[in-house]
Structures are given as structure tokens and as C-alpha cells.
Length: 484
Image (cartoon, rainbow, N blue to C red; front, side, top):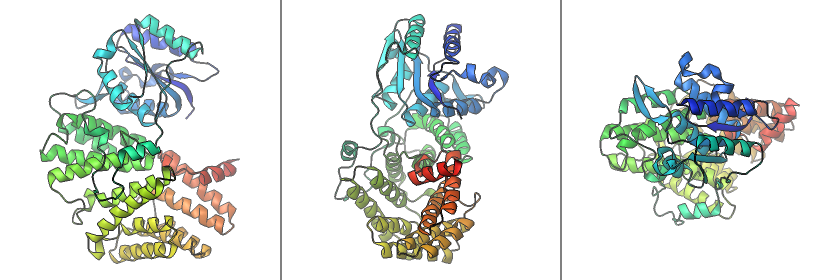
């Protein structure tokens, strides 16, 4: 997809707004600094009047936001057109979803509002909830808004810069995670601060939420999963998990947050202050407490394993946070892992042993790491788990053996595991992860050609499924060389 200079977001429900939008589009359609995305200008085929599906429209817009350098939002007091299911509106509008995407991707947000709309605008309230660091510019009319936008795009004036926080900083980590002794596990931040986000109706239609969660489950691209899960979460806000004990909305919240956690992990949102994986898992823990259900139930593996989830996310955080805090994050991962291992019998340890193997690897305990992955692999074979899971563990075992100075055996195991991991039995993320290991093992065997092939395949799968967390420097370097 081609990149764009600016994504222009606004309602288009009046002739005046439609005229303003087309003026901006026509003025900057061929600007040498890059196009301004105006949906009806660039993609007239997406007009609802021509029969375009509402999710097809929003997907095109969300992809365009990802491909744009900045997000320009004009607030005229309208929340935008609501998405609906079988005639029943959800709580989410097109404009809300666009703002959500810009916030999620940390795009620089330029925000202009007309008249006194900021004090009355539900959209302004959402901006303050999702992106409180954004500064707003007030204008008195659409004519002044057009002049302000054009002057800015012409380079004649600056709009306030978005002061986006870094994804992870030492201050953020210390402010959110004070329990350095790890005595209070599962006391984690709450998703969106545990509060209601955005306008809501007095009652929620649970069928609408369930519908969009079903749609999220049909996709592997993280943008699609997150957008549909977001619509479901917004629909559930009127029955917030902190205010109800009704089992049906709580079960939908549980499902939505598990969907969010999984997609956010592959998207690289581990430490996002409002939308991150830690906070989603923290809210899941609270819901399970309300429902009085176990944090891990071997009889219901589909309900997830919060020990596994939080151990994994803190392991990932330990690699992304400032070096001085990394050991504390790794220790919290280890605390969740060890407590989880202690609470279950030997035959149910398979999900946590690979995490402990990774922790031991980070701590340079390579033999212990290989033992953990070997035990997990043996358990998977004994329990007749899927070939995809067995293949994944084989790639992890092979990678551990690489650090025991067995490069040929390591590459053989990783290659064998990869042949077992197919699109039908393994997620794109785990296949990319295994391919990255194959790249390193191939380099250790001085096979640059094979390393390039595996890197290119890893990059293709990661790009197609928006798995930004899995595109590292080695993959980028070798992919570029292979494409040159």
C-alpha cells in the first residue's frame, strides 16, 4: 500500500462538510509532499450509497491510517455514522474507529474543533480518554477550519505536536509496576484504566457484541481482529465488567479481552499504557475473580491460562524496557511461571515449561533451557497434542541446542518443526517466530542463502498479518538484501 502524508478524518453528514473535504482532496491530490487521504476522493467505490459493506469501508480507512504519516481530526460536534448489525447500531462510529486506530498506532494526531464543540462533544471526550496528550486547536467556523487546515498543509503554520509517550519508558514501568518483590501477583493495571470509554446507551445489545467477536475470530490480520474486538468492547461498555455480576456480559468481556490480549501481543502493544496486553490480562484476572472461576482450568483450555499470559507478556516487556529495569520484569515473568507450575500436576505443565525455558535462556542457563523445552516437547508428544504445537516446541528445542554449540542439529530440528507447522494448525505469529530462529541457525551454519529465504518468508507472513512485533533487524536486513 502506498503511503500518505495525512489522513483527514471528519464527519461528512452535511453538504458543507462534504464540500470542505473535497476541497482539501482536490487541493492536495497531487501534492509532491504526499497525498492527503480523503476517503471519498481516493476510494469513491467505498460510498455506502453504492452498496459498499460497512466493514469493507472501515478496513480500507484503518489500513490508510496505518499507511499515513499523521492523523488530522476535525470535530464538528458529530460522533459520525454508527456501525450496525441487523439494523441495531453498535456503540462505535466510523470516526471513533479511525481515532482508535490512530491512537493504537501512535500516529501524530492533529485535532481541530469548531466553536464550542469541545465542551459538548462525545468525540472530544473520547480523545481525552484515548489520547489525553493531544492538544486541540479551536476555530469558530468551517470556513476558518478550512483555512487552518490548508495553511498547515501548505507549511505556513504548525499545529500543536502530539506528545505521545514512548511505548515503554522507565517512568511508565515504575509508575505501573511497584510490586518489585512480586508478592502480589495478578494485581495488574486495568484495560482503559478500568473505566467506561466513549458514549454508551443505557442498555447494551449483547448479540451485537457477540457478532463482532465472531467476526474477529475469523481473521488472522491483527488490524482486523483489534478493530472488530474494539467494536464489541465498546458495545459492552454499558454492562462494564466492574459494575455487573451477570454471567453473560462477563463471559463476553472475558472473550473480548482474551481476543484483545492475543492480537495485542503480536501487534507489539505489550506496554501500551491504555491498550496494552498487561492491562487486558489484568482485567481478565478481575473478571475471573468476579465469576469465581480459576485462573487456569485444565478442563477448559479454551478459557486461557493467565499464568501463561502474564508470564509471557512480562518476558516480552523485559526485552523492551530500559536495561536497568529488565531484570525486574524478567523476575516477574519467572514469578508467574513458577507459581503456575506449582499449582498444577506434571501432565499440565506443558504451557509454562517453554516460558521457563525462554527465561533460562535469557539468563544464559542454556542447559536448563534445553531441558525445559525437551520436557515440554515430550509432554506434547505423550499427550498427543496437535502437530503444530509439537512442531513449535521442536523449533524451540532446536534453538536452545544452538546455544549448546550444536548448530547442525539445531537447524535440523527447527527445519523439521517448521514442516509440521502449517497455516491450518499454527498461527502466523508462531510460524514467523520459528522462521526467525531458522534464520539464526542457518547463519550459524554459514548458509546465507537459506537464511535469506527464511527471512523473506518471515517478513512476508508478518507483513500480511500485521505482526509488527516479529519483524526484527535481522529479518529486515536479510529481506532487503534478498529483494535487492
